[in-house]
Length: 95
Image 1 (cartoon, rainbow, N blue to C red):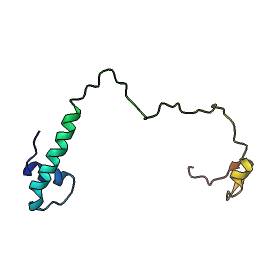
Image 2 (image 1 turned 30 degrees about the horizontal axis):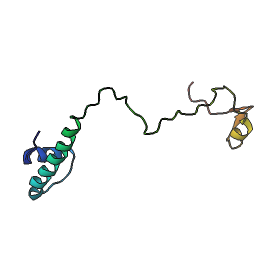
Image 3 (image 1 turned 90 degrees about the vertical axis):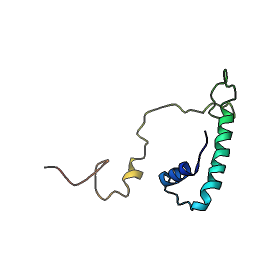
Image 4 (image 1 turned 90 degrees about the horizontal axis):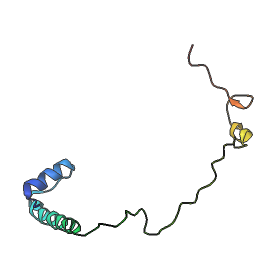
Protein backbone atom coordinates (compact mmCIF):
# COMPACT_ATOMS: atom_id res chain seq x y z
CA UNK A 1 0.00 0.00 0.00
CA UNK A 2 1.37 3.37 -0.95
CA UNK A 3 0.09 6.67 0.38
CA UNK A 4 0.20 9.82 -1.71
CA UNK A 5 -0.32 13.48 -0.79
CA UNK A 6 -4.10 13.24 -1.28
CA UNK A 7 -4.27 10.29 1.13
CA UNK A 8 -2.22 12.20 3.71
CA UNK A 9 -4.44 15.26 3.27
CA UNK A 10 -7.54 13.10 3.88
CA UNK A 11 -5.97 11.38 6.91
CA UNK A 12 -5.03 14.78 8.35
CA UNK A 13 -8.57 16.04 7.79
CA UNK A 14 -10.11 12.99 9.48
CA UNK A 15 -7.67 13.31 12.40
CA UNK A 16 -8.39 17.05 12.63
CA UNK A 17 -4.66 17.81 12.20
CA UNK A 18 -3.53 20.87 10.28
CA UNK A 19 -0.71 19.96 7.89
CA UNK A 20 0.97 22.55 5.68
CA UNK A 21 1.05 21.75 1.96
CA UNK A 22 4.86 21.70 2.06
CA UNK A 23 4.81 18.93 4.70
CA UNK A 24 2.45 16.61 2.79
CA UNK A 25 5.11 14.91 0.63
CA UNK A 26 7.61 14.27 3.48
CA UNK A 27 4.77 13.07 5.69
CA UNK A 28 3.60 10.69 2.95
CA UNK A 29 7.12 9.23 2.82
CA UNK A 30 7.19 8.77 6.60
CA UNK A 31 3.78 7.12 6.63
CA UNK A 32 4.81 4.82 3.77
CA UNK A 33 7.83 3.73 5.84
CA UNK A 34 5.56 2.99 8.81
CA UNK A 35 3.14 1.02 6.65
CA UNK A 36 6.12 -0.90 5.27
CA UNK A 37 7.16 -1.93 8.79
CA UNK A 38 3.60 -3.04 9.57
CA UNK A 39 3.49 -5.08 6.35
CA UNK A 40 6.71 -6.80 7.42
CA UNK A 41 4.97 -7.96 10.61
CA UNK A 42 2.37 -9.83 8.54
CA UNK A 43 5.19 -11.97 7.12
CA UNK A 44 6.02 -13.43 10.56
CA UNK A 45 4.74 -16.99 11.07
CA UNK A 46 2.65 -16.96 14.25
CA UNK A 47 1.02 -20.38 13.85
CA UNK A 48 1.17 -22.30 17.10
CA UNK A 49 1.92 -19.19 19.17
CA UNK A 50 -0.57 -18.60 21.97
CA UNK A 51 -1.80 -15.05 22.51
CA UNK A 52 -0.11 -13.28 25.43
CA UNK A 53 -1.60 -10.96 28.00
CA UNK A 54 1.70 -10.44 29.78
CA UNK A 55 5.38 -11.05 29.19
CA UNK A 56 5.53 -12.93 32.51
CA UNK A 57 3.43 -16.04 33.12
CA UNK A 58 1.72 -15.21 36.42
CA UNK A 59 -1.72 -15.88 37.82
CA UNK A 60 -3.82 -13.11 39.28
CA UNK A 61 -4.22 -13.63 43.03
CA UNK A 62 -7.87 -13.85 43.95
CA UNK A 63 -9.54 -13.45 47.31
CA UNK A 64 -12.53 -15.42 48.51
CA UNK A 65 -15.81 -13.86 47.40
CA UNK A 66 -17.55 -13.58 50.76
CA UNK A 67 -20.70 -11.52 51.19
CA UNK A 68 -20.72 -9.32 54.30
CA UNK A 69 -22.12 -6.00 55.39
CA UNK A 70 -18.68 -4.45 55.79
CA UNK A 71 -19.31 -3.86 59.49
CA UNK A 72 -18.87 -0.12 58.93
CA UNK A 73 -22.43 1.17 59.30
CA UNK A 74 -21.58 3.80 61.92
CA UNK A 75 -18.50 5.00 60.00
CA UNK A 76 -20.51 5.31 56.78
CA UNK A 77 -23.46 7.12 58.35
CA UNK A 78 -21.34 9.38 60.61
CA UNK A 79 -21.48 12.30 58.17
CA UNK A 80 -24.95 11.67 56.75
CA UNK A 81 -27.15 14.77 56.86
CA UNK A 82 -30.13 12.70 57.99
CA UNK A 83 -30.58 9.05 58.92
CA UNK A 84 -33.23 6.69 60.17
CA UNK A 85 -31.71 3.85 62.13
CA UNK A 86 -28.94 2.39 60.04
CA UNK A 87 -30.18 3.89 56.76
CA UNK A 88 -29.77 7.18 54.90
CA UNK A 89 -32.88 9.34 55.07
CA UNK A 90 -33.66 11.19 51.85
CA UNK A 91 -36.51 13.52 50.92
CA UNK A 92 -39.44 11.97 49.08
CA UNK A 93 -39.20 12.80 45.38
CA UNK A 94 -42.13 10.83 43.96
CA UNK A 95 -45.72 11.31 45.09
